[in-house]
Length: 358
Image (cartoon, rainbow, N blue to C red; front, side, top):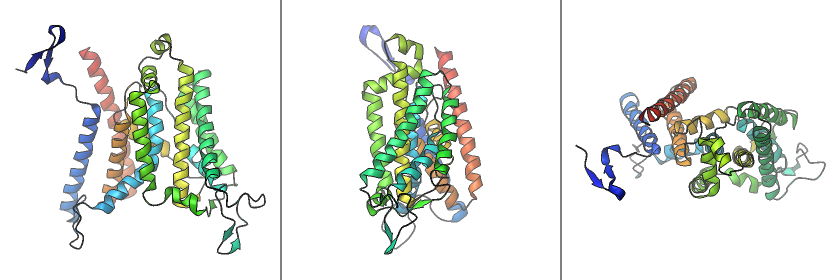
């Protein structure tokens, strides 16, 4: 028999009915996946996935692999932070990957140097205008503005025209990809200034991702913006009747998602020291998958930044684990697809179970 204790008004507390946070289950899944790769590594590769096995290194864990896992998900993770907020409101954003491509091309064109190895960089996009060797603030502001404008357009169409978010952001996805190809007629843009390249150097993408994750976790949990975001996703009509300006708030949410896509574009292009029109392909789907794996409900009203971060780590562990086991890349795609479907099925099961209990 479960232990109970009396509370206010004679109510009792039943320990067996304690509700664990949804992030706990996601974290448990992460631990189990790590254990699976550890066991497979021992059996198949005769090596450890997580721990260091080199005698000339004193570290307990394989720090290089851990760094790679975090690095390879940090940029898409930045996008996922914005996508998470959109999905919580009951929407969807399919444009973030294309916005990354367009923003990277435009921002990099304002970050080019005038000389390469002592020779003039005549291939610089704005070489004739003299817009080279500009302060790093210029391409950063341009990049953030591009992402913000794309997000505002998405938000406007979703909030004020009644177009479903799927269609509105799908249109932006196609248009932004067209902009990325049109900007330089499909030619890559390279040779940024040292100050711009520093944005994505080393572990900077991870630091930026962690900072933004902590920031938006606090915003969603402790601010009016966060409360309104969850309220709209839970019941839009009730939120509107309670005085929340739903349309304006939706524009704000999509604008933030676009802004974060702009941040990801800056980090990606500076990390790669080049920008190409094909950058960001499929990033939007990976970002949505991270959020879904992290426990967010596609019907809106439920989810968290912490869950999305754990979902991103699960993605990173799977990719790194498959590479560790030397399995072909297409297996990764099949497994990711299965995980996404499984996460959605689990979410539907949880919702039906909650309704049945109610």
